[in-house]
Length: 73
Image (cartoon, rainbow, N blue to C red; front, side, top):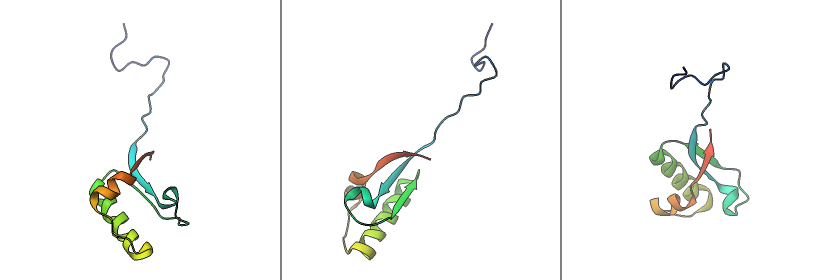
């Protein structure tokens, strides 16, 4: 009888890690900036900093959250 961790045939399951990401180019900018992390506070900080320094745009946390997509790490 197979137990709950027996996947049979020596197959080991793999799990993709999903992280949140923001890609500047996906937002219509000619810019290669991208940030991917599983820490939302870190992501928001980096995106806000980049937007202000490079694009002279101030983004609220809510603005950044609207830009977030999921990506596999």
